[in-house]
Image (cartoon, rainbow, N blue to C red; front, side, top):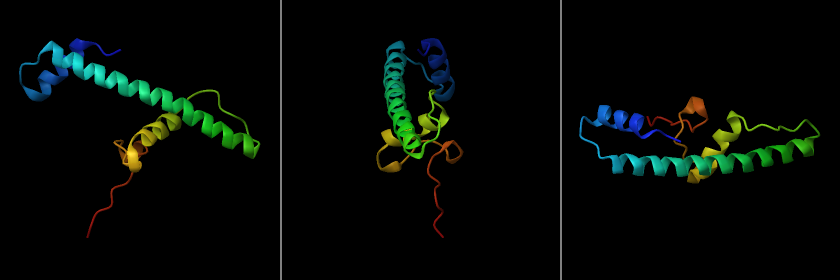
Length: 97
């Protein structure tokens, strides 16, 4: 899914270090597994959404949309600690005064 060269190039740019191809492949494997988890969870989120829409008597969605993905990421991250930015659906961090 991810091309190793573009990941390798980004790692080189950010770290200014030599990068082994095995390290790049390990990173790609990790993120591909995470992407699969989000996709499967988004299907569950769409089912939940359609269940609520059926109860309310309104139309049901057939496509997985942005909200399903955001909710899937939130569901996967425990205790609602989302790694998303606030504008992408993550939790708003409150400043302590």
